[in-house]
Amino acid sequence: QVQLVESGGGLVQPGGSLRLSCVASGISFSTRIMRWYRQAPGQQRELVATIDISGAPNYVDSAKGRFTISRDNAKNTVYLQMNSLKPEDTAVYYCNTWRIRSGVRDDYWGQGTQVTVSS
Image 1 (tube, rainbow, N blue to C red):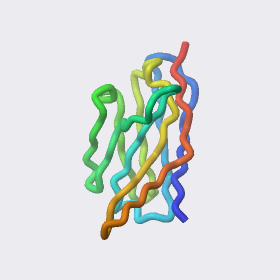
Image 2: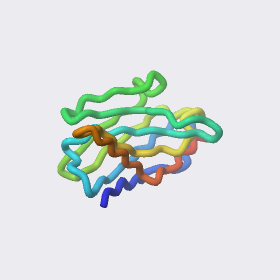
Image 3: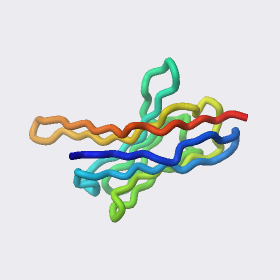
């Protein structure tokens, strides 16, 4: 059974930092591209950051220079370090992995962790 469990969310003031973690089980973590998405109230879920199996990251423009995605394959964990947080970063943040293999797609999500940026 595949599980993705996020943690690390909370309430932070503008300009503050948080580090999100996502621990994966039931998958071959080191072979997976891992992603962080977020969904703000009334908005569509958006991709924030991706890290491939070599550790190369990619970010949405709004996250560049402020967020850092990383992974620890020994711990089956992907992280999202978020600095210089803004109120518009307020959202539920989700960990995700999906892939297509032999024509079959799988798609796994965590339960989400709430990030609130407010003074």
